[in-house]
Length: 241
Image 1 (cartoon, helix red, strand yellow):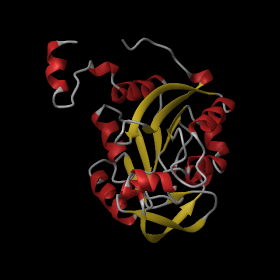
Image 2 (tube, one colour):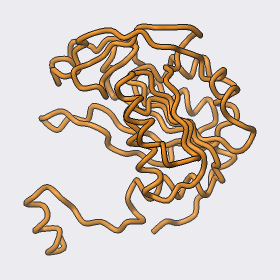
Image 3 (cartoon, helix red, strand yellow):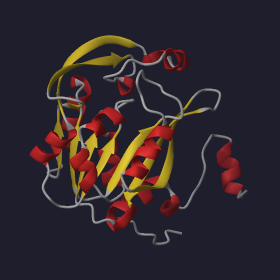
Image 4 (cartoon, helix red, strand yellow):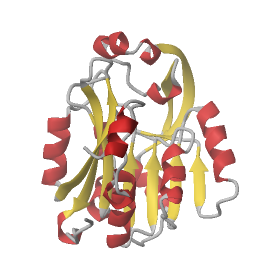
C-alpha cells in the first residue's frame, strides 16, 4: 500500500486516480454514448445533477422530485443552470396523484413502504407522514419534456424502479444509458431484487458496464448498489486506464 494511502486509511480515506473513479467513468460513459439529455428520476435535493456538473457533464438534465421540501432545494440549486430543469413529480404506474411515504431521512422517502428489515437496519427509514404528490408514467414524462436526441436515464426511486420501467417501455427502447439503484435483498415492500433487475435489463439489451457501492449496513453488508447499464449496440469499450 502506498504510504499516503496508509496514512489516509486512519481517517477512512483513500487516494485514487481521478479517471478510475466511478464519478469520472460515469461522465466518460455519457460522453462516449453522445448523451445530450439525461432524465434524473428521484433527484432529491439535486445531488446527482450537481455531481454530474462537477464532473464535466454539460448536456441537459431533466430532474423529477416529488417531495416538496427536497424539490425546493433542487430548484434553488438549478436556478443558475439554464440546462437543468426540475419538476415536482413522481414517476409511477399511472397519471394523477399518489401518496408518498415521507421518511425521517428524506432520501428514504418512497411510494413503497420499507420492509421491517430495512426499518430495523436504519430507523430513519420509517415513514413519519404521507404527502400527496403528482405522478406520471415515465413514457408520458419523457414525451412531454425531452426531444429526440440521445437519451440517458437514471432512476433512484427507493424500490419503485421496476414499477417505473413497467410504464416506460418506449423510453427503455430508446435510452442508450440507464442507471438504476439495485438491492441484493428488498428494502421496500414489492421491490424487485438486484438479480431480477439484472435479468430484466439483459432482456432489454443492456450490459452492466459499471457498479458503484451506494449504501451499507453498520456491519458492512451491502444494502444497495448503483448499476450503470449501456445499450449493447451502443456500447463502446475504450480503455479508461
